[in-house]
Amino acid sequence: MHDRELYRQILGIQSPWEVSQVDVDLPGSGVTVHIQHSGADLACPQCGVACSGYDSGERKWRHLDTCQYSTWLVAQVPRIRCPEHGVHQLSVPWAESNSRLTALFEALVIGWLKIGTISKVATQLGLSWSVVSGVQARARARPGTTQPGLPRLDRHR
Image (cartoon, rainbow, N blue to C red):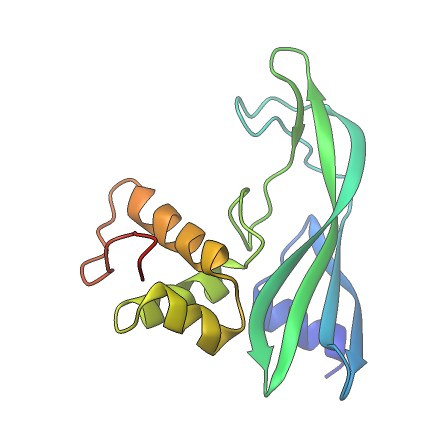
């Protein structure tokens, strides 16, 4: 199995997205998975109406480690122009719009937050305090979900 196919399967990447390249830099920065959008299925994230493409911008997300190596997802994420709502970036299936971590990495952070403080989780995972507190705030804000065991968000931790 080729590396692109492996990461497509383990990340659950489906059309119109595809894994275009996997860079392995050992012992350097780890693994970088490049993902691209085919340009099909462009729709406004607010109303769902089919729209024309506007431009794209590169975004980068931290993902779960591949073995002991840091793994990053990088994608040129298209923006669309909706006649009613204006210019908006498409959503990606692997992360929330305001996060620089994949959903799976956020789940790991949430699991650690159930047993540790924000500072300790940040140190353990090599993240900043503000990134970990952002994960906690998003977890608490999700409609219809409860996160028992998540510690209170405060700056003294």
